[in-house]
Image (cartoon, rainbow over all chains, first blue to last red; front, side):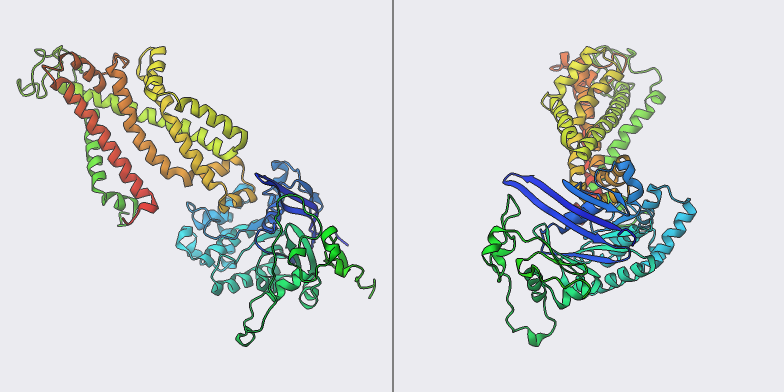
Amino acid sequence: MTEPLLTIRGLRKTYPTDRGVLTAVGGVDLTLDRGETYALAGESGCGKSTLGKIVAALIAPDEGSVRFDGQELVGLSPRRLRPIRRRVQMIFQDPFSSLNPRATVRRIIEEPLIVHGMRGPAERRRAVAEMMDRVGLRRDAADRYPHEFSGGQRQRIGIARALILNPDLVVCDEPVSALDVSVRAQILNLLSDLQRELGLAYLFISHDLSVVQYMADKIAIMHLGELVETAPRAAFWDAPRHPYSQALIRARPNPDPRQRLQDKPILEGELPSPIGARQGCDFRSRCPLAFDRCAVEAPPLHPLGPAHRAACHLVEGAAAPVGA
Amino acid sequence: MITRNSLIGRFGRHYPAVAGLALLAAVTAMALLAPVLFPQGPWRMVGRPQLWPGADPRFPLGTDILGRDLLACLFYGARVSLLIGISATLAATLIGTVIGAAAGFFGGRVDRWLMGFTEIFQTTPPFVLAVVVVAAFTPSLTSIIIAISLVSWPPLARLVRAQFLQLMPREFVLAGIVMGMSNTRLIVTQLLPNAITPIIVSSSLMIASAILLEAGLAFLGLGDPNAMSWGYMIGVGREVLRTDWYITTIPGLAVLLAVLAINLVGEGLNDALNPRSRNR
C-alpha cells in the first residue's frame, strides 16, 4: 500500500492568554488519502480552522507532525516549504476578504503561477482562461475587479486561484458558510466535479452537517480541540458511536415541516473552557450518558472498524472482530 | 475616462478641492515662471527701499527694506516652498512607509524596536528638532529637506503600520502566504496597494506642513542663504512690522494660501479615494 497523502500525528497548538493557556488543537491524529474528502466538523471554536491552517502551513503547531506525501512539513524553512505550497492550497471562508481588492480577476488567478515562476506570459494567460472556464466564470470577467462580483462568483475566483497550481490537497475552510443558500449547492457541486476531474483531496472544514453529508467520504468530529469520532461516510451516518456525534446529527434542521414539532433532545449543560488543564472527558458536562468514570478518565479513541474510531468509554471493547 | 463615479469625477464635485487645485496651479505657475519674468533674480536691489504696493508701477507689490522687488521675491519664494515641500514629503513618505511596513509586517520584536525608535522622534517637538538638525549642518536646501523629512515621517510610519496590522489577517494575505509568496512580494503586491490611499492623502497634507516648517526655519535665519523663500521675506520685514507691515503680510498671505490650497486638495483626495466617505 502506498503512503497516505497526509498524515497528522499528535498535533497540538496552544495559545497563551491572560487567563491561562488555551488549547486550540489538543493532540490530533488524522490520515487522508489521495483523492478523498475528509470532513472536519464541529462547533465553532472547536479548533477545526486552526487545524486547517496548520495543514496549510499558515500556523506552526507546538508539537506533532504533519507529513505530506512522505515529507514532514513541521519545522520546514520557508524556502524548503515553497515547492510543497504548490501542492497544498486553500479555499477560504469569506469571499469578500479572500480576494485582493486592487487586483483584476486575471491577476488574482495568475498570481500563483507568477509566484512559482511557472510558464511564460502567453501560456499563463491561456491557463487562466481555461481555469475560468473550468470553474464557470465568463472569460470576459478577467479584466474586472472582485467587487464587481457576487459572493458565489467570488468564491469561484478563489477556487480558480487555489487550483491553478494543480495541487494534490486543498484545505477548504468553510467554503460555503458565507454564501447564500441558493448558491451553496452550485459551489459544492463545482467542488465535487473538480475533485473528480483533477483527482484532488479535500480537507473539508465545516460546521454544517448537511454540507458534510453531501461532500465527505470520511468524517472527523472535533470537540474542544480533540477528535471524538472519525468514521467513513456510511458508518458515520448509519451508526454514529459517540454521544456528541449522535447529538449533532439529531440537531440538524429537518426539512419536513410535519416532523418539526417532534421534540428533539438538544445538548444542555455547559461547554468546559478551552483554557487551562482539563480532567476526564470534555463532553461529560453535556453528555446524556455520562457516568462516574467520565469525570476522572479521558477516553482514548477506541478503534471500532475500518477507519472508525470513537473516544467514549461506552464503546470500549466494542470493536468488530478482525475479519468480520 | 471621466465619469461621474471615476476618481476625477468624484474629485471634481468637491468644489473646495477644485478651488485648492486652482490655487496650487497658480503657485506652481509662479514657481515655473519666476526666472522668465524676473531674469535678474530676487536679490537685486532694484528700487527705493520700503516702497508701498502701488507707489511705483514698476513694483506692483512694492519693495522691501533693501529695495528688492517683493513680487520677484514672491515668485522665487514659490520655487523654494514647492521644492522643499515636495522633496521633504517624498523623503518622509519613503522613510515612514518602509519603517511602518516593516513594523506592521514583522510584528513582535521588530515592531517594538521600530515603534520605540519612532516614539523618540514623536516625543521631541518637530520644529525644535528641525532647528537642531539644520543648525548642526550648514543651512542649505539639502540640509533643510533632510531636517524636515526627519521630523515628518513618524505619523506616517504609524499610519502605515496601522494599515498593515489591519490588512495582515485578511484572507487574501493568507492566500498569498499559502501560494508561497516571499515577504517582499506580499508587501509590494498585496499589502501596499491596499494601504496606498491613506498614504497618498496624508502625504499630500504633509507638503503643507513642510512648507510651514521651511518658512519657520527661514524666518529664524536658518534658511538657505542663497534661496529666496517666503519665510526669509517675513523675517526681513519683521523689523519694520509697525510701519511697513505689507513687507511681512504679503509673503505671509502667500504661505497661508499655499498651505490652504494643499489642505483643500488633500481633503478632496481623501473624499475621492476613500470609499466610506463617498456619496455624501
